[in-house]
Length: 117
Image (cartoon, rainbow, N blue to C red; front, side):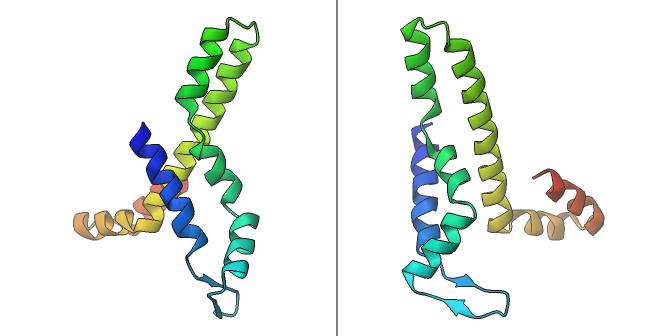
């Protein structure tokens, strides 16, 4: 779990340092433009998915608070956000495209799979 958290933090760092293209295809390399685009797009999902969920759940369970059930439901929602983040990383990495080429299946099959990722 700690390794996943470290990878998510590293992904956020890399994303803050990755060039951005606008609609016209112009490339922006200045950090302010990159940060602005990232903060308006995936940053919130990335940040929420980087929160150490297991540690928060453990603290909520130990407190004996009647709000624990609500906290656990929130934690489950955050886990869903983490799944979205993992799916995004998989799609960005091109793994799905490599599997598609390797298996030689119809591209429509992988379009459907990508919809769920």
